[in-house]
Amino acid sequence: MNRLNTMLDDLQRVPVERLGECALMRRVDTKFLYPAAELDSFIRTLGGSYGVLPAGGSNIASYRTLYFDSPDKTFYHQHRRGRRDRFKVRVRHYLDRELTYLEVKRKTNHNVTVKKRLRLGFLEVGLGGSEAEFLRDHLPGDPFVIRPAIWTNFSRITLVSANDRERLTVDLGLEFEAGRRRHRVEGLAIVEVKQPRFRPRSPAMLVLRERGIRPSGMSKYCTAQAILSPGLRRNRFHRVLRTIGRIGHV
Image (cartoon, rainbow, N blue to C red; front, side, top):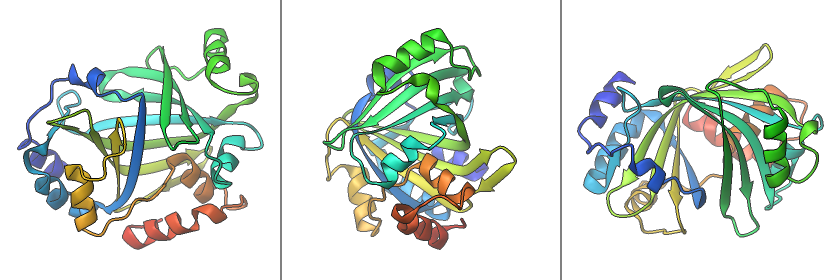
């Protein structure tokens, strides 16, 4: 990780003010599973097309996220069944910036990701009255039904296009927690291209295609549930789990 952080120093640094400009709360996401050992080469190949968004004194940020679901895992099964109009609810701690948000992510029928968020006190995870009102506004059903389900931890590199609002995130060191159950995914990088509208010929998309890396609809939350709760039906996630096993270790 230190070597990768040093390599990122060669990239142009993006002012943190551009984060709001490139927040892309409504966007098209395309995910790829990539060997972590080959990240240096991949990022260098992008050349001057992207700059790195620093996180405090580092180029690599730390994230800790608590996902919520109903007791019968409604959100998990929405994804497993391939439902397009589906939701996720999470509290995400942006540790380096000392920020915490309650976030609702919706994947629409048009494959567009819409994210709504409410700022909480740093490291808070409780859902009170104002949080329930926020959830009622952006989520179907009763917000008091959902409960904490899975923690995820990972490190993230954020690259921002030099020419438009495209953003590229690279997640590493993925860990899952549910009670006393723990799992760490080794050797895997999750590359996600975030665009205002789908653009298949952006620099990052072209490099990934040239390297034979195909899109993969991996969900961190659903992958965590599939690994930590083996009794769940997980037919839709077999291909992703096999890809993770081939690239790294699951």
